[in-house]
Image (cartoon, rainbow, N blue to C red):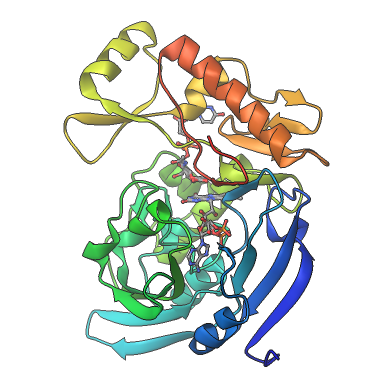
Length: 346
Ligand code: FAD
Ligand code: EPU
């Protein structure tokens, strides 16, 4: 029998409120774990069956009912482990809402996470695709990732170098459901140089009338820009960017730029590679604001697929495939989904 205070098991659980596309689906079992210490006991109750870990479901597309026990963490504790002269070490449970952690860190006088304000989802999912926005990725601030290794049946701790963080990538993303992330530790500075180079931040701060910005001002600027550009999943179901920005060899990008001089190109962290804007290519194929039944492309951002009401995951995926095929045809570039596909392969 489950100890209801520390974990609980529900049969035939609806998933519509557990994914931000608000696609209707049912899981055979939902396992909620409020204290990771009881994971061995809670997992024993569903042993032998496949697992699917979900946070807030803001980076998944459920194309079919999962044949798996959905595991959700409900540990929502945040604490400062250590105060040093120039930084603090913060530990947050997997179930903590990411944006709440960002806002909490700012009220504690800690900085670093301000550019990552308003990213939906949980702390446990943040390392999965190494969340990033406005010129910052979370791996810069990660001190350690604690997890349960389902293969070894043991708690494990990862140093940042072991996590293989990349652009929208990590060891955890490459091996879905092997490591159940239970908590993340972050090293957050009291003072650091603010990152305001990303297009739009300076202008937003100017509009706000801020002359000498602090970390909280940058967070507010990022929040305003995001509210303007990205649809609110509570109003219009979506999973943020549906496609990653492709990273291509420099020579290929030069050729593309000869044909499409306005294509936005960004550094990719390696001199021989460039990141190109998937949103621009999709918009240039005419998809922005397009709608097929209840599946559509957001009118405010071409990279975001939206559910106008009752779209199924399969319908959203069919639209994504058409978008990707047209980009491949016009630009010769393969674009790949960012969210995890559940019940389908790309
Ligand atoms: P889920 O969607 O529930 O899960 C995502 C993946 O992580 C799945 O593979 C899941 O199995 C796995 N997972 C979740 N929790 C755990 C855990 N505890 N242990 C192991 N695996 C786990 N992302 C960005 O990087 N930058 C952005 O700017 C950004 N903007 C967004 C804007 C909107 C409007 C939306 C809807 C999404 C946006 N995203 C963005 C994507 C999303 O918010 C992030 O990927 C987020 O980290 C997902 O968190 P989640 O808890 O919802 O994870
Ligand atoms: N653009 C268009 N059409 C559009 C939207 C954008 O042509 O409809 C062009 C803009 O002109 C701009 C470029 O695309 O030059 C980049 O746009 P934006 O700044 O909105 O960034 P993005 O590349 O589309 C990425 C992330 C977002 C993150 C923002 C801000 C990916 C896949 N997406 O989007 O992350 O919030 O930068 O840093 O890297 C997510 O991952 O879910 C997500 C929302």
